[in-house]
Image (cartoon, rainbow, N blue to C red):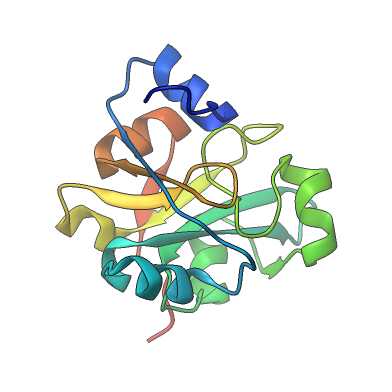
Length: 159
């Protein structure tokens, strides 16, 4: 890792003794996960974005799914036992999670929110998630990600 500055997500993974790899890249302007995957020659189905929602009950929920997919809000709500969930506004991301758009990861948010990862992750030995800062990715096994986030899987992508 050299002198790479660790993110909160990396420190949490280190404390949990979870194996992961770090990939860094240059990013002048974050557009979306597909743009980054294209830039780095990565497969969309192995590159996961992190979305944060608010449930009808007022609680927050974290969902990770392939960068080229859309979140099925009904399936997402059902997966966390809510009547409905809605996306939080971009300007709320930092206040709620401690991360910024493009650097949001399911690991190490300000609070530990219920986390659901699309079940497609189980098809891969490793998946790519944000490392907690724009320009940093974490490559991790889905089982380790589920363990460290106390997460579970569900089919949450729109068909």
